[in-house]
Image (spheres, rainbow, N blue to C red):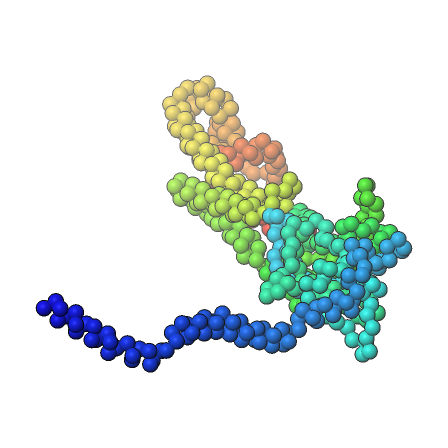
Length: 470
């Protein structure tokens, strides 16, 4: 059986071997050909593509031509133009795009502007048949000399880089150069809040060369007063009254004099916001504190709760205004108004305390007078300051007549009535002490006088305040 199976296997191999040779007579050659094409044919095809792309992409060749045209490699641009000679003039032109924010707490402002520099560098002059300038982006500016202008008193600044660095370089055939950059800068502004919020602030952005003194670089406004231009700027809390440029010199003890340019602007604050948020609520609280003068003096809970409510509300207003302001060491205009109003509100609470005290004291006197009605004459004289005979009963004196001249009434009680005498009646004028004692003995009159005194005092204060600060 094994012999039969071996014979069949040999016959099958003998039958299939000629068919395999007919389909692939040289198997190793085909394999070597595939390897050769994979290794050499692909590189040859890709080389043709790279050659075509190189011919189409001329960026590298153009950059080399530009550097050769401007002769950048032939000069040392670490040195300023005309080194060793007179100062190089650099013109400045500014266009203010926006005033982004003004912070009273930090005493600074943020401004976005286009800063343009104009100067001449004959090393960059090139021949041109049509006299046209060439414009480049920020990559070429790193290879040539440019003015080192910085912002004095700046806290933060950056050049915009969306979608590319916002830098433009324009070179003219005669060597004149325009260098423009878009910058956002946050700079210091020394503000005076003595008239806040009825104030006007003067701020300035200052430009200066960092390394080159007056003998090496001269900064100036390119077109005089027309060198400063502004877009339509609208601020929430300020109105821009004026934008104007100026120039001057700055002295540093160790390095000398430097040219400095100023971008000056005047800001006037809008008062309507503070009228709604501060002044009107304060006025209402002061007027509300006067309501207690018309409430009965016996209504202790009503008058006390009203007085405490107005005092706490004024404290909240003062705290809110102080939180949004820098901690300055002088008094502001809004502080004068708020603290005067707070004083009037506080005095209205003190007024009721005085009324309540004198009312209680007056009641105690009435109780003492009722007790004295059963005492002898000497004790009665000690009470009202007059002498009475022993046979006069104190019960004849009603309580309503205690404020009259009881001495005269007691003396006239034993004498017959005299006919009236025609003529002018003389009345002795009360002294200040007597007037005060009279008010203290009639505490209800304190409310009557407060109804007139407090409104008149507040109106007078407002007239003086707004006439000075407005």
